[in-house]
Image (cartoon, rainbow, N blue to C red; front, side, top):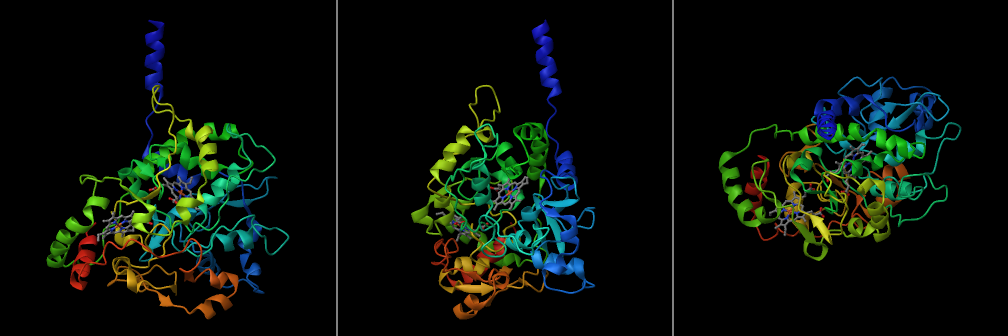
Length: 441
Ligand code: HEC
Ligand code: HEC
């Protein structure tokens, strides 16, 4: 009787995760102490070498760091920054999930769209020092604007923790690699995946995996357990995010022809669009897909071992489950293509600016830049993706660091644009039909 009561209590006390609560937590709560003093953020123009505050300061701030307007009340900060006290209680600002997972399209901010304009390096270098104008982070946070080194951040911060997440004070190098140039995936894809991340190495049911973001040294082990239910809500919210429909007319006849091309050339790896279509979650070996290998090889076995013996993977969905362990796959996952029109640039490292370039590998630009605006003028409606401009090697090399990060140089480590030659055999008109069909995803 008592046992039955206790069991009943356990069953009813475990409230199911709520997407609504998840959204509220995401947009109102800070999960790290302040990383940037509020005064420095408010006067960032000083760090840009200006003598007075420009009248359009908020817009220039967003432009410089690649952040969008917050589509929710956010204390006059752009999406991706959030008020949070500094270690000794002075007002500060921290990053949140939307720094990387909040983007904009056609002038509209979208929670869950990868931020392909972000310059995380500039943000840290210019705004973390209270008394110095420039701080050199211990590893590179962004090599090329729009990509970031989220993986390196996990590896770096894990180096200060034991497997129960206690701080160790001496740092262990678990294979730090800061040239993986990661393009942030859209949150609406998670619901279709059994395994997440570009390499499909983490179980997509894992709540704790996405808590790696919280590894600020001042968050002790207790803080992680306390927030686990909040992150279950955040995950529920992520699962509820939907892809935006293509905002212009679609040529039905072309799309119809394109669907046949898709069926024969793409479906077996990518599956169909929408939750009612099959999605095989196929991992394609590095040598078959032929895309840049740095991201795959950049996460070491050592880090994998740490992760799999740590609190992060010791997560049980039921008593029989020993935890949600990460695995090695030897390749990249062919992602679902839902909302693919909205998530340019393409490939795991964002090295290909449009769908057309993805399908015409010999036409992919070697060094290119773009406005980093995300309005209708910056969008390439024909090739589907971002309009780019070629940059020659000399100009690229001469630029100072902030400008250099605006050049995507595919000859550099982690940024290769090779591989995925699966559209090359198609005729020009088949490619256009296929692109038209992909707009319906
Ligand atoms: C510094 C940028 C950054 C921040 C901040 C960040 N992420 Fe991510 N996130 C990434 C990148 C990059 C990836 C892709 C990693 C890869 O596959 O290489 C990713 C992947 C994910 C995925 C897996 C998506 C998929 O389809 O495979 C989830 C879920 C996720 N992040 C949730 C979160 C949550 C929740 C937060 C806040 C607690 C967060 N992220 C904070 C950069 C970031
Ligand atoms: C043999 C399996 C395979 C086939 C066939 C294939 N793909 Fe892919 N595709 C992949 C893999 C794997 C990736 C991820 C590669 C990476 O990011 O490095 C990918 C990536 C992509 C991306 C980029 C996704 C993103 O979010 O950046 C698009 C778009 C895409 N494929 C479209 C197509 C189309 C259209 C076809 C048909 C012509 C096709 N693919 C055929 C395996 C395949």
